[in-house]
Each structure stands twice: as structure tokens, then as C-alpha cells.
Length: 275
Image (cartoon, rainbow, N blue to C red; front, side, top):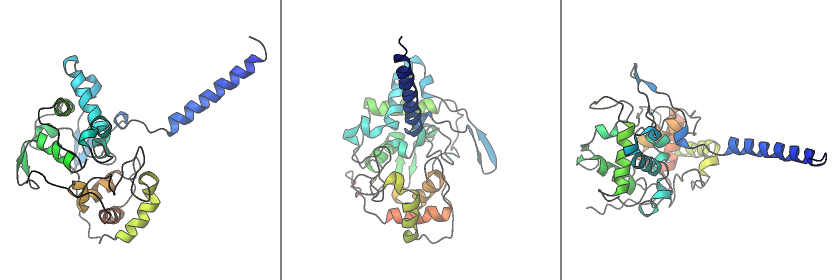
């Protein structure tokens, strides 16, 4: 190799390494690959559970479990005919729900297959897990229910069964759902608008429309007014535990203010076609 070529090759290698470093630093990592604690304190009790990696599913289940995992992770890309907004399940169920909830853990799905069927106050009747999943498709996704016996629905169930396969049967699991907090603070949407502009708009945009990697929080492409996130207790609890993403530092009072501001914004109307 000539002496003139060697410096050129070295320059190319240095530039390439630099580009890879910056790409790796700034590109969002897949949510499901983030490491989450395998224990959580609930009412003074430490609960430990070793999270089950979907990629470790046995060969007989692997394809279906991984299909369900990817649907939960990238719902709108995989099932566009059933999703009418720009959200995926993983926007609320961080890491495809394979967490113990709590700070930065989103809404856990571990154990959910073991607590259904159960009575739903919203539906006024007992529903099974498929009903509950389709509630999310119709409300949080502002879309259409999956056929009960479709391969996609069965894949979602297979994934949820797998990530719940290593826990004992219980009537309930303390990490499921959102921890609704009690606070006497009077929510102030005007203050919430300021907090949103300072801490949320970078990802979700000032108009609430989101970006390619971040979901819209209001407007025509967001969840509809029938979703649980359209209620202040649930929305503020989620904000308090999880936002800003990977650095949830807002106080309960600030979470309530931001939640009140978001709820004031326009979003799609839920149309219940079953009634």
C-alpha cells in the first residue's frame, strides 16, 4: 500500500468510527431491550420476579410469541388496518409491558393473563382478556377490534402468556395497572401548558402531534376520548411515573397540571358501535 493511500484509509476509518458513535448515541434504542429492575417495593413489601425474555421462548412457541411481542412493540406498523392513530401498545406498555411497572416501567402486562376474566366497571360486565385487548384497539388506538380467533390476536395472547409464565398464580399482582395517587392540588391547565412547553414539547411537539418516534398526545392522530388516558387520574399517574421518558422528574402537582392541559385539547371521539 502506497504512503499516500495509508493516511486516506486512516481518515476514512476515523470518520466511520465517529459516525457510528454519534449514530449509536442519538438513535433511540428499542424499548424492549432496556433493562428494568426485577424487583419492586409495593406497600413496604419487596416483590421479586425474574422477567422472561421473549426470545427465550421454546421452539414450539417461539414464532408466535415473537410475533405477539413485535405487535405489542410496533402495533401501528404491523396492523395498520386496526390502528387509526399513530400509537402502538408500547407507548403505554413500555418495553412491550415486560416490566414491573413503577418509575420508568410504563404499564406492566406481566401476569395480566392470570387475572382475566374479570368484571369491568367501564363495560358493566365481566370481560375476558381478548375483550380487554380490543378495548385498547378501539379506544387507545382509535381503531378497530381484532377478530377474536385471528392469528394476530392469538400471537398477542401467546406473548402475554409467555412473559407471565414464571410467576405464581395470584388473584392480583400489585404491579398491574397504574398507581393512582391522591393529591389535594387543584390542577391548573395554564400552568400545565408552560410545563408542557418546557419539558414535553421537544418530543411531542408544541401542537401535540408528536414525531416519527414519539406519539401524539392530542389531535386527530392521538388516542380518543374513550381511552383510559383521557381521564385525569390515569393520565397524571402515567406522566408522574414515566415522563419525561427515561427521566421522570415531574412532581405530582406538575403531572396533574400537565394532565389537565392535555385533557383540554381536542382528540377523536370514541364511537361505541356495539351499542
